[in-house]
Length: 259
Image 1 (tube, rainbow, N blue to C red):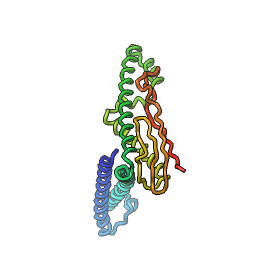
Image 2: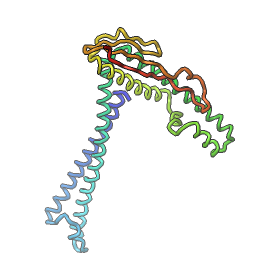
Image 3: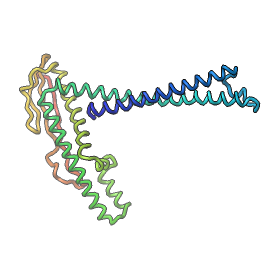
Image 4: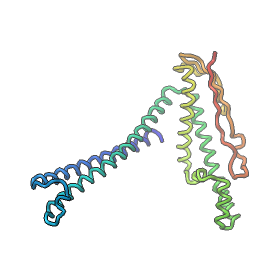
C-alpha cells in the first residue's frame, strides 16, 4: 500500500476509535444518572441486598446500573482493540511516508529506474503465471473428467494453496504487490550503499543495462562498488512439467567498500 491508501485506512481506524469513545461517554453519562437514582433513594449498588422479592424497585435500579457498568467495560475492551489497530496502521503509514520521502529525496535516479523495471517485469511474470495456471486448471479438469478427488490430488502436486491464491489477483493487485517488494529491494540496496558512502554525492559511475547494475557510488564518507547480477528470467517463457514458468528474474546485489 502507498501512503495515500494507508492514510485512508488510518483515517477509518481513527474514526472507529472516536466512535467507540463517544459510546463510552454515553454509557458513562447514563451510568451516572442511574447511580444518582440509587443515591437519592439511599440504595447501595449491590443487587443481592434487594433480591428478596420485597424491594423490586431497588433491585432493578441496581441491575440497570450494573448493566451500564458492564456496557462500559465491554466498550472499553473494544476501544483497546480499536486503538491497537489504529496504532498498527499509524506505524505502517509512518514507515511508508519515511520510505517514500527517502525514495523521492535521497535515492539516486538510477536505483529508482531499476526498481521500476523490476516491478514491471515481476508484474508481467505474475500475470503470465496466472494465465498458465488458469489454462492448466482447465486442461486438468478435462483430463480428470470431473473426478474431483483425482483433480485435487494432481492440482495440489502442481500448486500450493498460496500459489493458487494468485488466480484471484487482478493485474492491478499484482502491480501493487510487486511495487512494494521492489521498494523494499530498493531501500535495502540504498541502505547498504549508504552504510559505506554516507550521503551520496555522485552516481555517474554506475549504470543499469537492463539485467545488471554495476559501478561506483561516491559519497561524503567513502566509495562503494556495486555489482548486481541478474538471475532467472532466461527461461521465463519455458513451461515446466509442473505447469509453471521458469524462475522469474531477480537481482543478486553485492555492495563493497572501495579501498
